[in-house]
Image (tube, rainbow, N blue to C red; front, top):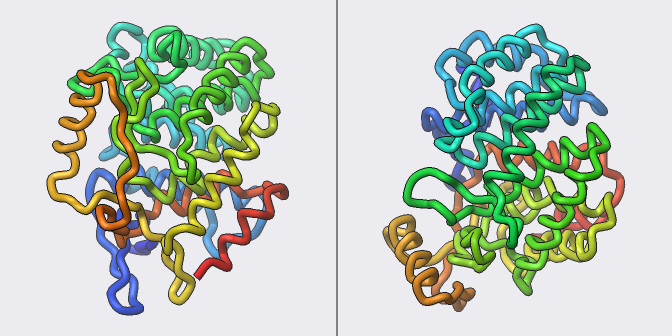
Length: 348
């Protein structure tokens, strides 16, 4: 997946026969590369790697930073640079808060934008020990809680565009991860309390087979669309909040982790020769994105929620994305519990 000419990790990989075929899509590839760098950095803190993580970071900064002006990407990159105690972290912090200084202006950003910005700023505050940086991190976390979280459901929501109260599972995972990171780093009990309540509400919406729905109505916490069910949600992104929930003894967290991983036992998503993790289980239909919004609007109007479809109506999406492997490395590096997870490698 790594291109030693561009120093980027492919945005999409498919198997053609027994050969990997990689493609790069801009600007998506910047986000995916940053995801992988975060995972590799996590591993490098404990184990040796075939790459020098410092070289990869320097290459990204030199070749791609000016082209990548995305707030979310630069937020997670700030986490990476702060962890590495890189001088460029200060520049990235200043850049972010030239854009995030006005709270009403921040309504135009997505949950992922603000969550990753909070994540990176929290790490930078820990590393620098500066009161101003800590204050900026706290402001972002408080804004997420007071302005971007529904007070009854504890689900995050957007202020921008037609999506409004609809939220993807990815947005939920990143929102909870940002809150958990801040609460852990600063031992902040009020933020931890809110985060645990939100975690509990989200855990309650896990499917009976361990699956995580893709699309929710944040105002009701109802599932608007179960599909696609992403492999990365099952074994990595859900763990961004489930592992902290387990560490904090949130009710149902351990069972949710086991169910999330057990989901793979029901579907041939992982193959070993050659190694490949299929991206998702999705509906067998065309025009999935526009139809998904129509479906969500219909459920909202009727007050109903989505149901899982029969096997004949779903299909495996034969693609693997580099960010999936990045999040796998990030969440599981250094964990010695949940040996159950390693059993997944034995699934044909």
